[in-house]
Image 1 (tube, rainbow, N blue to C red):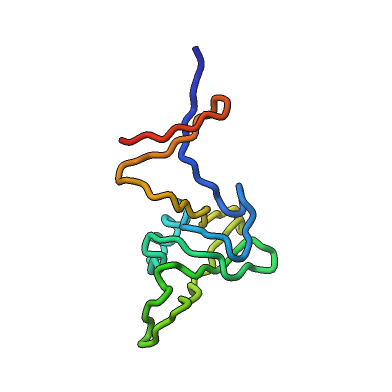
Image 2 (image 1 turned 45 degrees about the horizontal axis):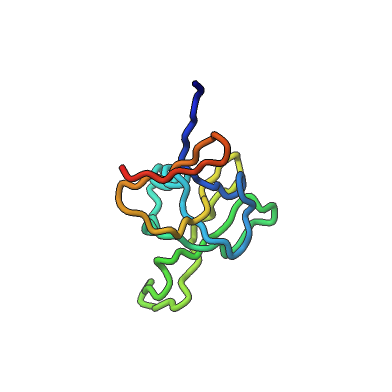
Length: 126
């Protein structure tokens, strides 16, 4: 017998994947907690977006959230969306607020697990 370790598959920007302009992202669990702790408006509305700008050191970035594309803000419709006023850490201060956006549709309650035995990958409906 042996141990099998399971974890949620989450590719963290700045840790697992380098931050690049144009890549599709979502808020990481750490990012969601950081945002909620500061009472910031969640402009992502649970959707993905793309990195629109990086800091010179590459440790932080701005995002255009999908929810802003074609939306209205201050009486103006933005067909290309708008850049979030929030700068998200992607390594700055050892904080990682963004992860790769997973476009695969999932059913409510479905959990995607990565198994550390060989290269096995399992998807399970809970």
